[in-house]
Every structure is written in C-alpha cells, then in structure tokens.
Image 1 (tube, helix red, strand yellow):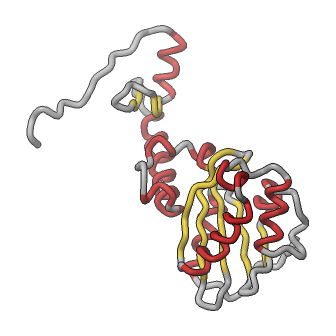
Image 2 (image 1 turned 135 degrees about the horizontal axis):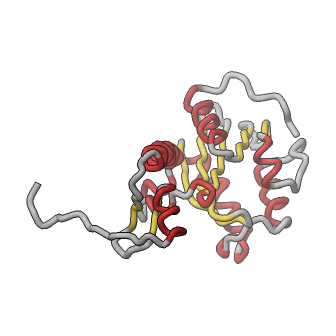
Length: 205
C-alpha cells in the first residue's frame, strides 16, 4: 500500500480527507495520470482486493468489481460503460458526488478533481452514521460535508436528550422511530407506557 501521504494538497482536499476519516471513511488519492498515489487504512480494510501499489483508477475498479464488493445493479449490468462514464465525469467536474451500493451497504462517494489533475475520492458508509432518514430525497443527500454536519448535530442532540430524566423520542410523521433517548429505552423495557404528542401546526407562528 502506498504509505506516504501526498504532500502539497490544498485545504479543499485535506479537509475532505479529514472529514471522511472522522467517520471511518475510505480515501483514495489518484495522480494526474490516474494512478493510485495513496490509500488510507480504511480503504484497504474495506476493499482488501489489492495491495494498491500499482493500481490505476480502471484497474482498481475491476479488482473491486471482481471481488464482489460492488452491489450496484447498474454497474454489474454494464461495467464497461459505467467505468467509461465515471472516468470522464470525475475529471470533467471539480466536484462529483453520488451514492454507491457496496457489500458494506450504501456509501456516499465524493470526488474532488484538483487543477493539476490530482483526484481525491472518499467513501463514507451511510448505515453506520444512521443519518439516511434525516437526509432530503435529492440534491444534498450525497454531500459529504452536509452529511458530516448532520451527524455531528445528531450526536450533540442525542447527548442532550440522554441527559434528560424524561423519556423522549423523535418520530417521523408516519410514526417510525428516529431516535429515543436512554430514558425512553428504559420506559419501553419497564413497560411504564408512553404518551405520543404531535406539534400543533394549526396556529400561525
């Protein structure tokens, strides 16, 4: 595995890398020639199909695909066309974001193409962050920094709710539980009962 972290990366790249690693994300840095210049430990752990020493974007794609790690129906149906499209897209735009399906679950993928042709690509697992139910259906749902901001806010909210003696739970409009604090869990286990309330939106604010 290339073990020397690339020097001279701009803040836009280093912040992206540190944000991904904060949440256990996989990171790859590609040279302007699309050779793998660096892979972090999480990348190697999640996708142990290569030593990452002489890989390119294309060769690593095939290594990961052949290992069975990609669960996307689109990719498995026509991997040649998918690879050709992504190879162009990730260098035609400064930032490219999408959600990929892998054997580990759904992952938010972000690609940053720098002015010198270096590409930084990160993957962060959505199930482990438990944020998908909070994300909007389109547009920003794939943005790494929006996901990170949301996750940090949820951690703070969970800590605040857990500090309450009162049992509190957050639910969607359809009644699906999003988060219950520790007192709420104790109430369910103890069978003490729960009262459900809905905010009154009938009155103008």
